[in-house]
Length: 360
Image (cartoon, rainbow, N blue to C red; front, side, top):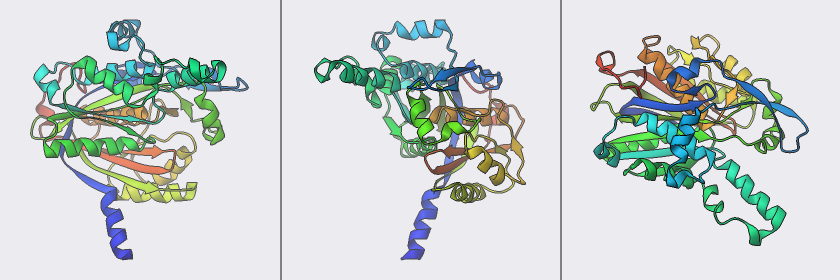
């Protein structure tokens, strides 16, 4: 029985992706919008925690006013949470140039950690201040995790399956697995996997309570990132070769062992993108000892699922531009799970031309 359980665990951790490519992407990050914004210096500014007793650096997301105005004019988005605007901007970039027929066969997997935080805080403030009878019926629907992505698919006319996943940063890999399943079974012709988070000072109290903010390399931020995935036979792109997940841990020592096990499953020769924040930074340095690495130009900024999307897009761009032939992207779930993605060149990568919404 014990042998059977270990075989099952091993099978659940590592997945060879059956011909799935990243076709295009979209993002909103503290550097702005578009792939080029990942390498710009990101601004930070002090933000107090909920009690206002301490200042912690926060990465602010700079979205051009024209972008905000474009989406806020949409009827469904007039009272939507900020995360809805981040989501729709990233997804619309990834789907730029798609026909209505393509959109009707497009699935969406949304990955969240905290979700609609701003409107949730406002809603519960009303309850505690004015009483339960005076809680806003307008705000309540916007506190539900499914609400932002329902706004996105309705506004953009997306007709495929839609799924919201809630978890830590490592849930990004589960989102890629879901997309691969839909493509393999024919549930969707193409799938957008998107991660997003919005920032609220109240979250800092929770981050402080678990000790994340004690590290100088933990800067909470907000933003979104999306990748459009399709079968490798349909188009060129950057190939998603393997993923590994389910490497749990309950201490830093276990985190190091989990990371080493996960990275070993993807091979020891593949270079690795440095992605860790907070306490995981020191653990990652030990786990990557002896391996070739690529540095993150904006280290320490943590936006959970959105950060996982940014790191994936950054790695894909390194491959697309010829700076790397293959690369591993570690995903550090700070709530005790390690995962990783292996990307490589697609079969027709060097011959494909790309639209403005695609990797450049």
